[in-house]
Image 1 (cartoon, one colour):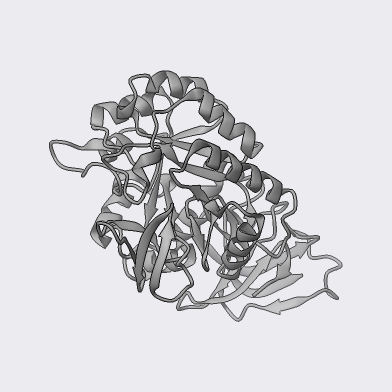
Image 2 (cartoon, rainbow, N blue to C red):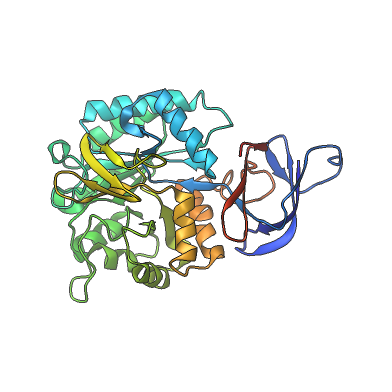
Length: 379
């Protein structure tokens, strides 16, 4: 396959006029012998790598925690259709046995996944080791302190799919020992935490390296109490997720955070729940009732934000068109950075020879025109 007449997004985060060559489902730099194969005229569109969402819960009526291979397949099909070609769904705070069953199902699904759907390349465990004070849409009845034996069970059940385990360090005096014990096995993130600056910084110094949806479900960032956000800023090895759906974070804060952390540490996520791609109405998230109107999802019980109803491609578009972040930067934060954070940049995240041939074409208005997954046109 040859995709001609496109603005190709390069590994140095620029667009260059050119062509893309694909053979046997991977990118190649050699066009020889490809004249008779499929030729696509990109009509001057932006050609970017397939997006990677490393924190979302579901879409089109399904949730990852429904715990069935059929649900994961439908989720993966929808995600690919909107240009998200690799996924690492997030779990909710559920009973440990239920989480183990969900992870085992995901591991079985991965052995059977097909190229027309987004690749399941990881799992982001948002609970159950979180804070009841900052639980958000998580079910407080299932919150427990971080526990190495339970974490090991999660890793075993997922057969290596779990890439992040979130904790609230202030909930457990032994958080440093927990982080140390899990080094080399899984990345530790700070998630749904009420930690102050000193506690969060101690967790990052101990080896935690990821922050779940920065600003949301954590203390406010103020001039005397910088909290988790300040600790992230002072910890150069930490990557930070941001939900940029236009609901969760004010555009000025998004712009300020890019200046504070730099584009290399930012990861765009959708945090989307099962209502994404569905009509307004009442849905569930982690067993809790959620009202959805437009792209705003809130708990029926107390009105707290309950994930988003926006896919990652729409979030990326919002970041550029409504928040003033350059397209080149936004693309990196939805492709390259999540791939690096997940440890899969050798196979995903850029239009580079030898990697999975996942390409998204966007027109000048950033509207989706074409999705190619493993060298096959699916949209």
